[in-house]
Image (tube, rainbow, N blue to C red; front, side, top):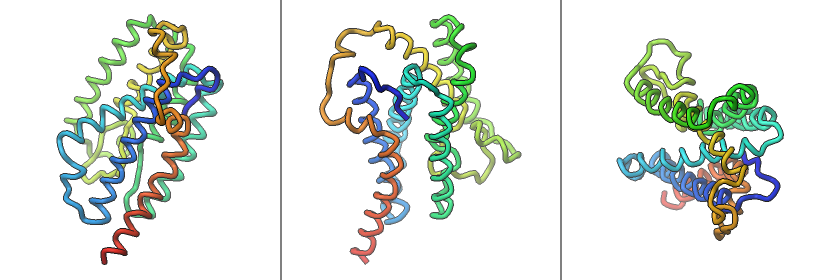
Amino acid sequence: MTALSENRIQLMDGLRGFAVVLMVIHHFLFDLVVFLGAPSWLFENPVFNFLHYIFAGLFVVLSGVSSRFSRSNVKRGIKVLIVAYAMTAVTYYMGIPIRFGVLHLLGFSMVFYGLTARFLDKLPRSFAMLLYAALVIILTVLTSVITVKVRFLWMFGFIYDGFFSSDYFPIFPWLFVFLFGTVTGMYIKEHRFPEKFYTLRPPVFPAIGRHALLVYIVHQPVLYGVTYLIRLLSA
């Protein structure tokens, strides 16, 4: 999921690690509600709903930035997609299917960008950033108000009545959040950010950020095991 290998920027790893920790906490709250019957407001409330998308957005942007440092976004994306659909199979078995979660989105976005970078990178940077930001806003509104009857558009954000995915990050609008990150990555790679951005070394979180994909794979089975143990002990 992360492609920075040489002269790693510790602050970027730290921000990614921080976003991953918040994601783990968010998923643990979900498990408490689903498997232990905790009050639903513990997971679903206006504050958490807002913060969830803020930090998820940070995570997706950073993945777009990292694509600037990748030798092959297509290969990296395919690997992430293999992991993502393995998780889909497991979660279907568990009864909480992830049809198109953050890993599906990132894998798709990496492959898409890898195949289209030569064209997209020709767009003027300021124009591209404004275009991607505008598309995020427009598509967020459209996908939130439009419900479709057909069942094959959910990957693009247009859901039908009864659709469910326990983690859901559709291509629209999230692809353009990722692409916004790829443009941001141009400036970072060219060392145009303040010097502190490149020299700051946060504690703990960079180590987590460097292993974000591994944490994502492992954390949910671990959390499920913890909640199952709590359920057994409280029975």
